[in-house]
Length: 75
Image (cartoon, rainbow, N blue to C red; front, side, top):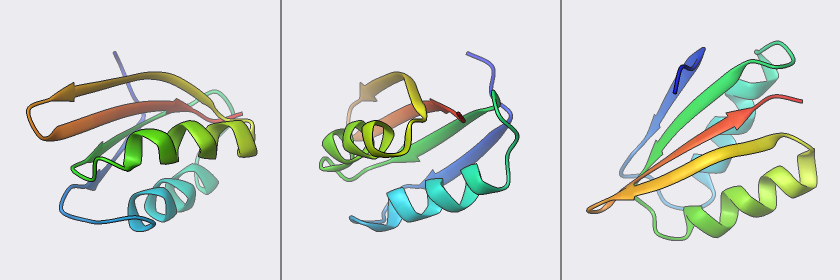
């Protein structure tokens, strides 16, 4: 999937991956896609809740070994 910006939040625990994503999304235009990399298992539920609360769209999420990737589209 193509993306406009990437945030590497690997090694960070809640709430830092969400805060980094929120900051990045604030600097992006509507419709642009943000890729977030994280290692915190709690980030899966965190990003689902974050997108519901903010209106941004969670396009996809994937897990490989101990790493999670999320693609969010700015509202």
